[in-house]
Length: 113
Ligand code: 5GP
Ligand code: ZN
Image 1 (spheres, rainbow, N blue to C red):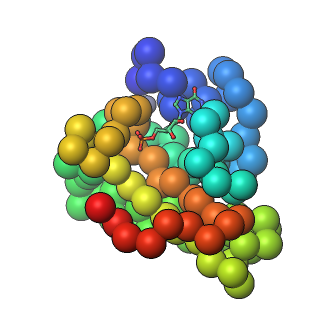
Image 2 (cartoon, rainbow, N blue to C red; image 1 turned 45 degrees about the horizontal axis):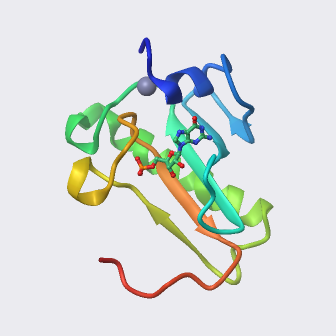
């Protein structure tokens, strides 16, 4: 989608990728909240989780699978990590192309809200 920053990064028009395949791309968050802070995004533009269709079920599962592989690659799988997807304003979504945050590399704050 034009003017979508995560579409541009996933299409390699800007930034650099840590991982890509035909369905998803992963890259470092520009404002890391932990020693490891990676974003996993679908190559297909989906603005929020509300726009998911039944046909996207496997895509979101694939995002989690890729995140778990990246966690292993970064060596944070045994100590642990957190996956987060924010939807709309109350959750703090600021980029309207769905993404999964992979956070780890330190003990993360307890609690979810
Ligand atoms: P949200 O708050 O929407 O769940 O997360 C958006 C995330 O995208 C934030 O953690 C923010 O730092 C990150 N971000 C925003 N713009 C860019 C960018 O241009 N490049 C990268 N790599 N990350 C970005
Ligand atoms: Zn997009």
